[in-house]
Structure formats: C-alpha cells, structure tokens
Length: 239
Image (cartoon, rainbow, N blue to C red; front, side, top):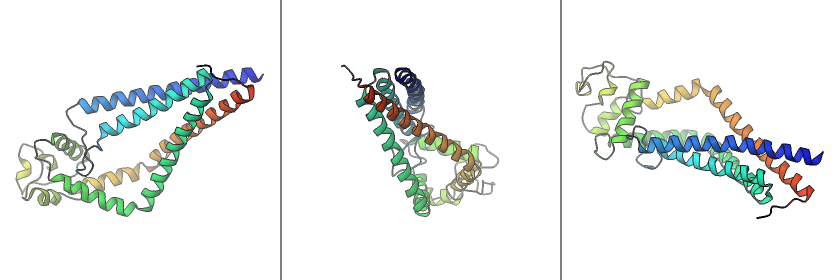
C-alpha cells in the first residue's frame, strides 16, 4: 500500500514538475526571442537599463526551468537531497514574492512617484541613436494605449527641450505630426492608462496570482510528502 502510494506520488510530482519545466523552457525561449528582436520591448527606465521585458522573461524562465528540473530529477530518482532543495527554492521564491508584495503596498505612493520620475527622465533618450528599443517601446505603447508621455504630452516638451512630441502622440497620425503644435495630441499620460488597466483587471490579476500561489504550495506539499515517504521507507539515492 505504502509502496503504491509512493509510486503514485512520485509520478504525480514528476509530471507536475515536467509541466513546470516545459513552461520555463517556453518562457526562456520567448525571452531570448525578445532579446534578439529589434528592441521593441526595451526598458523604459534609464536607471535600470537591464530591467527590460526580455531580461525579466529570461530570468523568470531560467528560475522556473531550474526549479522544475530539481523537482523532476528529485522525484524520479527519489533523491531526498534534490527534493529538499526543490522545497527550499520554492520557499525562497514564495517568501521573496510576499516580501516584495508587502513592500510594494506599503510604499506604493513612493514607488509610483519614483517610477513616474524615472520614466520622465528616460524620455530624453527618445531620439538617441543607441536607444532604438526605448523609442520603439514608447511608440508601441502610445499608439496602442492612445496616450502621450508619462503624465501628459507636456512631459515630452520638458524632456526634449522643445514643443514637439513623438508622432504616435497625435490623434490623427502622419509623419512629423508631432512637430505641429496645432495638432490634437492624446491628453492622458501612459502611466495613468496603465494604472487604469491594472485597476480594471485587478480581479483577473488576483486570480492569476492565486493560481501561482496554489501551484507553489502544491509543489512544496508534493515534495515534502514524497521526502517523508522516502525517509520512512528507508530508500536512499545511489549516485
């Protein structure tokens, strides 16, 4: 009976982590694709030039892959050391998420203020030759979200030291429309648009967060249960 339960639990955890590992592979692939693309998803922040979408996805994908690999190998080999490592990694990730969440909500006003200022500082790099990715990123978000600047189109005036805005700020888009001050520009800033989107989708985002939490807790529960079952049956991993 115990042997059957152990076998069932082992393969359940293996499949669980195999899916986890495949998701990590997918994320890593997407991140690499973004990194080698034409910089359309570059960072908006000059203070954190490495904090781009590509680098974030690559980092998350790598962590998920390593974690999934530990779980898969630990389960199939019935290796207590790997299972414990898997549990500890998941625990560290969970604690880090909770700490970041608490800090974010505790200092949300300060985070928002600093983020706005940092984004505004980055606007001055819009026309620089070595920041094509930033330019593409602003063009994409302003065109798709129908917004202009961080808090409004005047942010561009301050950043570029002249009364011009990117063409994607124009409600009626055409080449060099941003240099015509009589044109109608999108009035709302992109930061406000993003805040509205987050507020409108808070239930969806909360559901996704809960699903991630459940997956992490299940992984920890599976690993510890299998760890104790292996310990009770006296099985040891032979290298």
